[in-house]
Length: 568
Image 1 (spheres, rainbow, N blue to C red):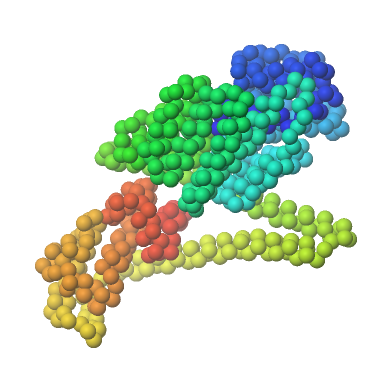
Image 2: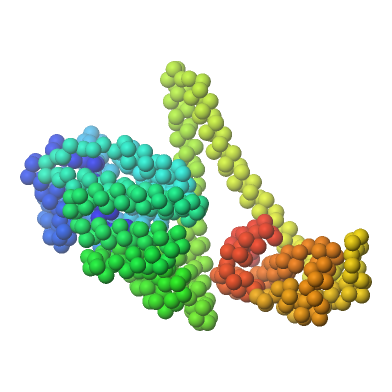
């Protein structure tokens, strides 16, 4: 979130172990660098550089770690990562690496930073790789927090939030060590509350339960109160609270309130010192302006976000949101060239994010199974296990296996539907789609329109279908009745009694049939955003189109498009 956000994690990793290997003066110098990284980064870097050249190996390791932190805070992630990996290798090569707890703690600190580098970049698979590789060096409570944050990122909000809350409750409130300040320990817990609040916001996007936003704001306010009680960077703390509450307001659909909260940035000039925080304000304001139909302002803040993204490279999901806003804004401005450009960028980014998440989901699935197996082995080996425990493990294992089986079953059913659609489309090429409407259908007993009128309406509809008039957003019952020189009562009765479907169902079938065929015939059409495709076939918004598409085909438009690409 910002350069302080994960920094204080190190305060619970090795505050007491330092004294076993570093003298009091060295401990105070390391603590001082930690604080300087917040208040005076350049001075912190100079201090860290000096101790990194110390003849005392352990002391020099801490200096190198803080140098990596300095570049992390500047969003120079590649360089920071290289320094951390090199440091881990050097720590592992020392003679004391296997026996000294403080060396393991140092590795845990480096792994923690590597984890958040890759998580911030949206590279969840690599974040999990380091977390798994060095699990023995990462304390259980930190592992649970990091693992929970990945669960949330992957959409498993219930289990992810449960892990984060458990970690918050089990993290010890440490006694202050040499040179350590109480506020630093409080900052650690404030960060945990903020992480949970952000998880609730993501959960709301999926479930739309208002209570989740209340929970998010509660956690944000707890965190801010903790910091303000000790007057810890009050201006920055208030700015972050406004930003987080603004996002909750936007998620609730109150864009006027959200924008007023985002505009509080003008009171807090300190946010300009942190490029990532400024990015989040820019993206939030772009989203508000877009929904408030202020297109030029939305584009202005989107461009600011993208410019800063070239430096931070943080959050592909947020970049995708920016591209989507720009696509829709340019579409509203009738700038088809730029609308197409950002639609294409969106699709490319979706594929990239999808690939990373698939790898990560496989890791999570395998890890959960391995964890269950380990627990089962422990119980069985102890010779003191209980049937209830074993039964519970079997239930969990069965649940995981069933979930995996169900997932593949659903995917198989989707693939079958896809193949069936393609087959039907091929068959429709050789026959007229609406012949059934011209052939006289056995009428219902209560029919009150004659055969001549039925023939007239059927032929008229056939002509409108041929002209693709159904793509017009105004293609309503009254519109069609006027085109056919009849009235809505007769036309409605024709659909209900002769075709035996509503006018709405008839229109939806034609539009989705058109989309299905065009996505096959015109590959460039697949690069359009869902909003653009929706407007192409007469719908005002993408949500309506997606809902109708799923009802008609049993598939999502994205799934169908992706399958066509793979088939090609």
